[in-house]
Length: 102
Length: 190
Image 1 (cartoon, each protein chain N blue to C red):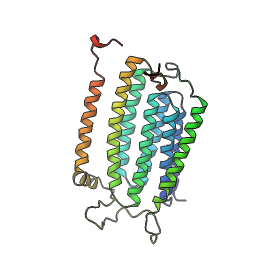
Image 2: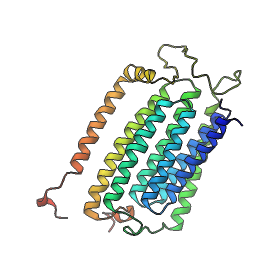
Image 3: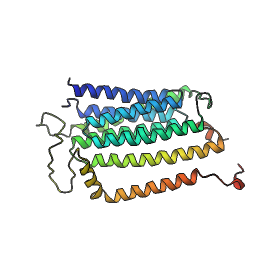
Image 4: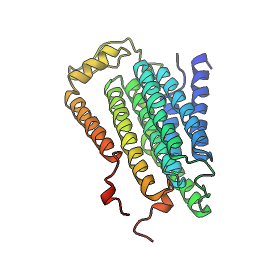
């Protein structure tokens, strides 16, 4: 039986969200930024499942299910946008995508 | 410290370490590999939280489909460390990003850290027995490890979100097809 408290799971999920946020801020490769978004969504999933398990309620689990669906669709559209952008600009770095700046 | 606790620590370290290595790795392919490590460790944490169906879905959907899509695009675009000159970010950007993400974790724990204490204080374990199987109100879906209760919840209480997400998947599919269609050469002038 688990003797770690739900606090441990929550702190882990917050750490995952923070790492994803850090990756989103400091990386310039758009692929890596999308992966960091996935990591943030996974941290949210861990927190939701912890609440679902402790609160004895399946709603959190079903919300995790929908988050997975939305994340898969988001990745598909984001990568298609990135490929379409790469065809025009020949770059995947977000710094080189300032179309209005230069 | 029981064996299950040991498993929790192992997979917690794996998921956080995989995430950090993903953020700080030079090559996009190794970043994707570290991301797969992190996602599988998170799936193992789902097993520890008695969500077996979601753990299987996590491995299938994330590690199986999403990361394969990422690797496919990385290799299609040929963005190695040499192909796209991955200059390091300015140190001000790095320090500001680190500070803001640390403060994000701090604020999240300040706001949500107390929410783990919602179990009743007379029970000695914070984790209720997953085979308890009773619910007080009618419209509350009780926690269950069965797949059938997931299906029941999806088909009754969450019927409209299921249909909306199906429509969203259709829209995403059509959008991806239109985006990746070969553009008309007559208007390809930029």
